Image (cartoon, rainbow, N blue to C red; front, top):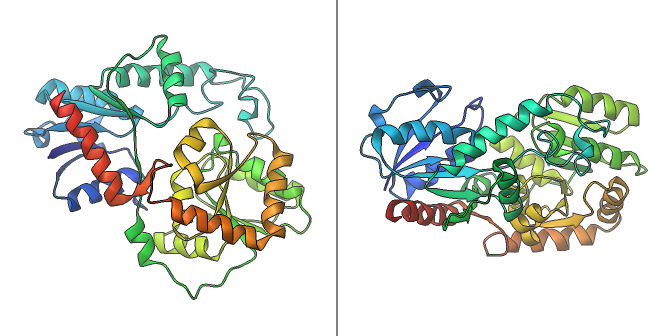
Length: 352
């Protein structure tokens, strides 16, 4: 199959999910045509030449669906579009439910209309895609709320998520010793709720070092909060895959309150993650995570304490997570299986 992939703009320091998929699809023998930032500008001017002869166009994020529509006008092939998420708190679908939007847990007062109309625009372009994928049924309801109508498509699939197990195996090291530290791998943005993690750790006596892998606009706020609450935190910024793999293997366990792929990476090494019990997260992760009540910082602290006081529980949950990764029950799969599932979705678009 000849697949046009519209890539998101990244900093190029690491392989993002789209690039991981592109590599996996190439290894399975499919031809990948990459449309990147230099090929289009704000979705208006698109370099079409390289896309001629394609079988399908893939927009792997909602912000790219508009560009995919421009490409389709020129080459008239179907689009598979994916809607990842309506960021909780940023887009005010429900103010009260998302009151934890900011570090200070206040109801958002600024920029809400900007983000609402931006994501409404994304949803309108997504609705034009021939075949659609979504992260969860809950997210589909959010998209339909933005659109003000039900999407009655016969083909709306849950997108599989790839865990690059070959890369992780490359850096597996059984000689690595555990350190008294826990880890999270995340963009530093409010809806990831890293501030909840820091607040929970402040409630625990002699809490271990908290290693935060990633970067983002919230780092200064998080650093200030950690200092105020006297929580030991280490910010690594963006690091290499090898460095990330070592840190995971060194850590006792992980906290990923609203994340999916990092949970799979940790699970591959037998490192369990604590997550908030939200319907989309549980449907994505299945048995890969240990769940605690959403937005309840005291209960999060209790879950962390349980792990710290019961090392055998960490090993038990880590084993369950590791054994759950390659099987149904979650939407995370080793890369080759995820690619096969994605190809089946592409075939539905081609034969629709």
